[in-house]
Amino acid sequence: AVTFYAVAVVGGPTVGPIIGSALTVTIGFRWPSYILAIWVFAVTVLAFFFLPETYSPVLLKKKAQRLRKETGDSRWHHPHEDVKLDVKSVVTKHLARPIIMLTTEPMVTCIAFYASFVYGILYMTLEVFPIVFEQNRGWPLITSTLPFLALFVGVLFAVLINLANQPRYARAVDANKGRPVPEARLLPMSVGGVLFTIGLFWFGWTADPSIPWPSCVVAAAFIGAGFNIIFQQCINFLVDTYLLYAASAVSANTFLRSIIAGGLPLAARPMFNNLGVGPAMSILGGVAALALPVPFIFMKYGLKLRKMSKFAPVHEN
Image (cartoon, rainbow, N blue to C red; front, side, top):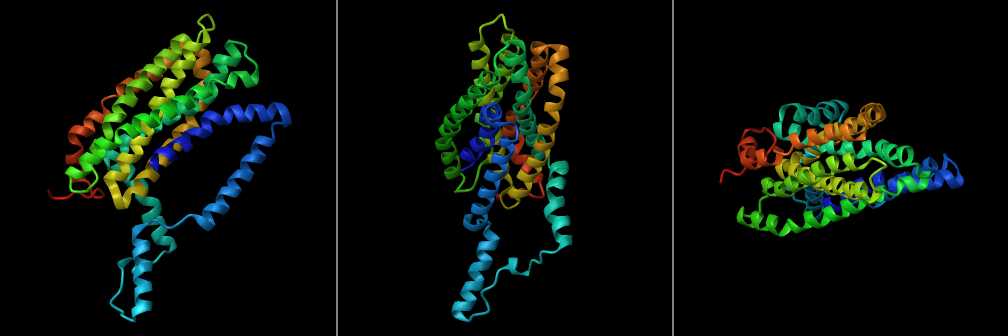
């Protein structure tokens, strides 16, 4: 499920520019926004009526209520029935907890910053690709967006790598008596980090118009593959680590990555126009290289950090 969620998250930024440019040229610049609004409304309606509840405390509460009604036995009860949802609890628990976890949980902090960095780079390409292909190479508007397909191809390739890790992860879970093993998610992340770093340097130094375009397009596929592997395994790691509090951990990750993804594109044009594509991409590649040890650190110290956490359950054995 997380695999297809990640593809959907990345599919918008990678395929959207192609669709948006075609719509802008053919029927006007307003229509991409109109179509997006219509689509969001339709999905919201479908989710409201057909998306099932999956939160286990709510499901158990409903089961207890049903059994009480069917049997007349008042002993059927679940603690979630005593939870009162008011403004204070929403603010102190549901809104504050992600921020608390982001600032006090080293695993959430590091994973969120890593995921946010690669996510921000993905959104930065929305500004970088037009510079490289439209401004520097002189391609027409629609044609200049086609290299985004390379990012998407890389994303799809990443799905294969992530799925290839599933048998290994399943064996680790079986050996752990059916309990999640977050550290078993990290090997693909290390592969993704290498691909992402290579892609950034490769793209930066082959983006010059004097170099044939296929080279930097292939580099874009490396960026897409590396991004999706890292992004998906970051989500998997947080879910496996925090279980009941996974929603808060993922919310913290989403909060931070949305801020960075909104900010980095604003710096893209000044950065790339002043420094040049090669040096600017090299800076980003250098940051990506500095982040390469992250999965290895958690492979070694993840269990110890989980034992120290107030939110991550760890079985004694």
